[in-house]
Length: 335
Image (cartoon, rainbow, N blue to C red; front, side, top):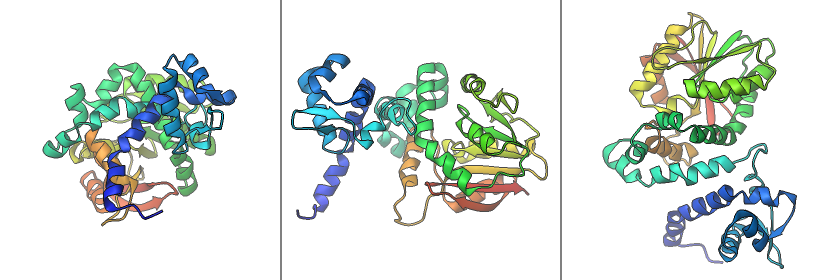
C-alpha cells in the first residue's frame, strides 16, 4: 500500500471526532459490559440497549475496524483488549473518560476557536460558569469526573511511586486530592506515614465516603476548604498532582504561596505534572495544554516556566524526577 499523502494524513486527523463520538456511544450504551459474558449479535445487543439493530451494527462494525470489538463471520461481536477497557469497574477502565470526553468536554472543545481568539476558557462560554463550579453544582458530573480521572491517571500513581521516594515524610498533605486514589496508594506503600486529603467541600464529601471503605481511617483525615484561601498547616510535604495545570500563573502562584505559608522551613513541595518539551518533539503534554485552555482555563508548562512559578511562590525548584508516564515529580523547597 502506498504511503498516505499529506492530504490524506491531515484529512484523517481532521476526522478524529468520528472516533471520539463512536467510542462515546459504545461506552454510554455499556456495550463492553454486555459482552463481558461472551459474544453477542448486534440484534441481541440492540434489544438490551434499546437501540436500532442496523444502526448499532454499523457502529460496532466501524469500531471493530480500529480494534475496539471484533466481528466474526456470523456477525457476532466480542471483546478485544481495547474494548475490555470500556467495561465498568475494571482496573484501568476508560469508560467514564470516554463518556466525559464525548459529552460536555466535546461541547467545550467545539469552542476552541473562541479560546484561541480571546485567550478565554471555552467551557465557560458554553456553560456559563467555571468548570469546577459546574462539577460541584452537578454531582453526577462530579462523580463521572472522579471516575474518569482515576481511569486516565491511574497508571501515573504506580509510576510516581516507582520513581519517587516518599520515605521520611511523616505527614503528607494531598492538596486537591480528589477521590483519594493517590493518597491512599501512597499510604499503603508507606505504613508509617499519615495523610491529609484537602479539597473542595463537594469533593471532600465523596472522598470521605471512599476513605471509610479503606483501612486508612485512623491514618488519614479529609479536610474541606479553598486552596486559594489556605491549605491545612503542619504537613511535612505538600503534594499537588494535576492541580497547577488547571490554573493560570496568577492563580497557580496563589495556591503555591498558600502551601509555602502552611509548611515549615524544612517542608517539601511535590508537584506532579507533565513537562512540555521544546521544539517539535511530540508530546501528549502539548495537546493536554490545549485541553487545559479549553476546559479549566489553565496550561501545561515548560521546565523554565515551572522554575519561574516556583520562584514567584517562595520556592526553589530542586529537581525534576521523570516517571515512565508523561508526568514528572517536580520538587521544591522553601527559599
